[in-house]
Length: 343
Image 1 (cartoon, rainbow, N blue to C red):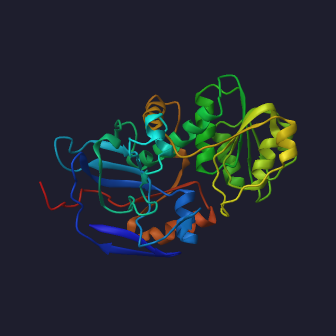
Image 2 (spheres, helix red, strand yellow):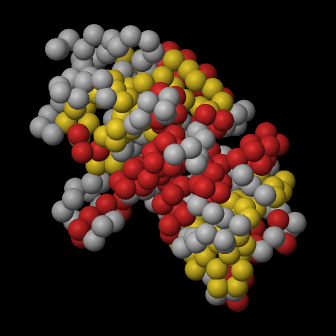
Image 3 (cartoon, helix red, strand yellow):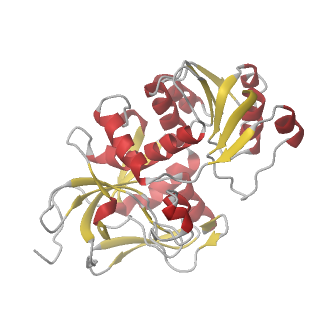
C-alpha cells in the first residue's frame, strides 16, 4: 500500500509498505478521505505540536473517512474515531476518555494516522455513515464532533447569543452546529475575507473583520452569552473575553502555535468569567455529528474547498498553510478499491 510519512518539518515522502494486518477487535479500513487540520499543519511546519515532537517518520491524519475492507462488514462506509483510550484509567472510568493519559491518537506522537491507503483500527471506533453523506464529507464529521464537544463545554442552550472568534473549519462548524441547536444570534470574527463570507453563509448573524492576531474592538460591542475562541491567537482570546457577558463562559478551542496563551487577568476577574479549555471530542459526539448531518441540519460540502490525491499532499499542505480556502481533504484511495492481498 501507499503510505505518506512526515520525516522532518516540511519533508513528506510516499513509501510502499506492507498492508496492515488487523488484530483482535480490529477491522481493515480502506481510507477514502482525510481532512487536514490545523494540528496537522503544526506537525508539518514545526515537526511537532505543543510538547509532542517528531521522534520518527510519522503518518499524519486524524479526520478520517473510509470503507471496511474485510470481514462480514466489508463495504460499510465509516467515520473513524481517531482516539484510542485505555478505558481503565480514572479519566476513562469517569466518562472523560478524551482526557485519557494513555490515549493513542491517530497521527500524533507514536501512533500512525490515516494518510495511507489502508489502516487497521478498533471496530468499536468505526461509526457507520449513511449514503446521504458523501465520501469527501465523512472526514468532516470528526471536527464537527469537536465543535459539538466545545458547545457542550460552553453550557450553551437554545436562545442564547454565541460568539465564534476565528472562522477556520472548526469555527465554521461551530457556527453551523450552533445554528442547528437554536442560537438566537451568532457573532463571528475573522481576518480573511473569504472566511468571513463563509461564516455568513454558514449562519453567522454578524461577522466582524479583525487583524491577524484576532483583535477587534468593534466585535467586543456585540455582547454574547458564551464565547468560543477558535483562532489560537491571544487577540482572539481578548476579543472573546471583552464580548462575553459578566459571568459568562469562554471556551478556548484554538491551538496556539507557541503553546502559550496569555490574557488580561483583571478583565477576566472583574467579569467573573469561566474559562474552559476544550480537548478533542468524546465518542458520542461523532454519533451526534453524523445524526445532525443526516437530518440535514448541518451541511458539510460547502466547507470543503479542495481535494487532492495522496501524491499531491505537498501541494495540499502548502495551500493549507496559505489559508487559501477552507477545509482541504486528501483522498488516499480514489475509484476502485486497491487489492489488499487477502480475501
